[in-house]
Image 1: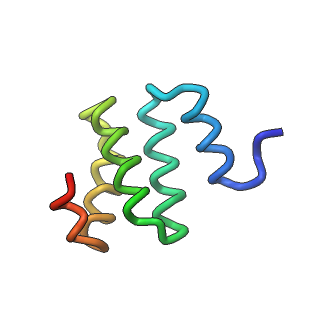
Image 2: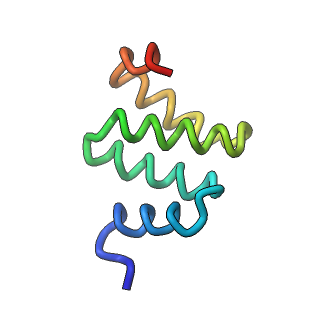
Length: 75
């Protein structure tokens, strides 16, 4: 079984399909919810690189950057 929590689920999904914008987006959402803002931003950025039209990733990415605006200078 893969599912222990959302983190294990989406980490496994991204590992199995690293080209999944959806997987990266949901992993980002999970990381953001647990307070791992930098890691969340990394996942949102990967989702956007894979699918620049991923509206959900764009919204979550912008929210994460508002929470930690200094991370935008690292991108």
